[in-house]
Image (cartoon, rainbow, N blue to C red; front, side, top):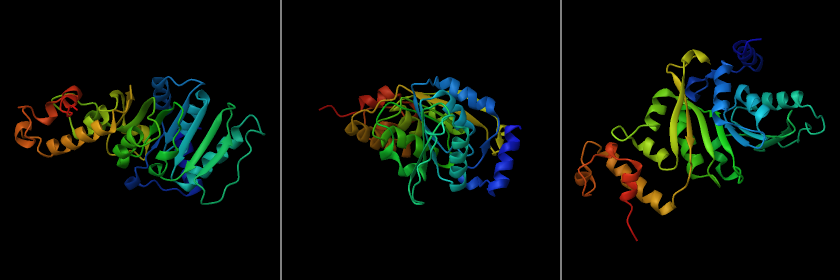
Length: 278
């Protein structure tokens, strides 16, 4: 069965009706899934966090390659389907035994077909920043477009440790803003590039989804992720918010800084230079 047919059948079976307001556009072309995971270079030693697994097309590919997959799904019916699929495909029936948990619990754990671990967190990803892994991990996901910046900033800023890398399918226009260079910088670009190095890997046509969104998508990869000292981050991002609120003005006018540049013209190194020296 083609994946597009499978997705539509599951939606019918579970009576799920995609809501555009919640960014529910299901990826139905598995070639882009494989390209995402290939780009990340995931191995049997890796832990991967996936946000918004939906019916599990990316999840299943990740589980074939990773040591452990932590999937975060807000929809109850999709979470139930993922749990059922993982159990039915597990090779080891002992390891596949599900943990019975209360209905209001935020976590389900089951075994996987590659004898690694699979953890299913049910709820909004923004509830789980504090519970993200303390060991090295990667984030690979087709994330909800309406909270793209919140998800990216959450992993970069709020988790116990930042991910080793992030490979994300997002709206193409947002991808272009994130990877912008000096001359076209935005507050979003600065807030991501302050922590890591983003690049756009490939574009994904709207026809790769069902129902098709009104925009094209793209996959970006953020690597070399580090967290500068909190006081430096606060100083720079506070300054930048003021500057981008008046981006047509030179910094000498908007911030009283001895620079004729405008905020969109500055590099990350330039912003570092504005950090007060102690």
